[in-house]
Length: 130
Image (cartoon, rainbow, N blue to C red; front, side, top):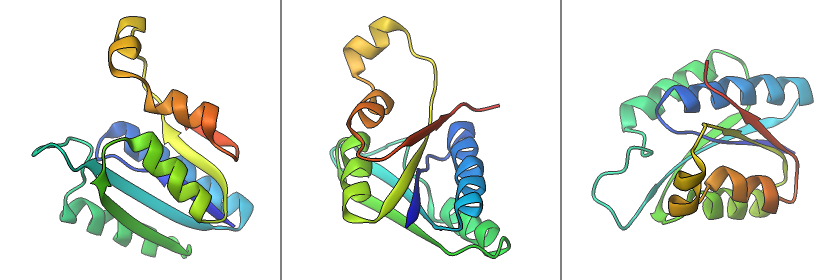
């Protein structure tokens, strides 16, 4: 089985990564780190640079943990990408970062976290930064 984490290059992504490492160790499972960005925009703050992904790999290498870091660039919706990956892999839990959004923000932009929480076929661990 696998622990899946949605990684973004910010404090929220770091919190999710830390929680996913603890969860993978607790379960004795492999860790799959997924970073994705939309293919319909030129700049996406969710897209990790190669140096950031290399740092994640180095940090995970030091932990003696089986892992894979995967970057997906062909997708428009983070929730859909993570849900698809969770169905393709043997995922036991999805770990996501959760941030506070106003009701109007949720209405206008939707909520990837909400979709994952409601549509995932496995448990979801939602963590906050800090």
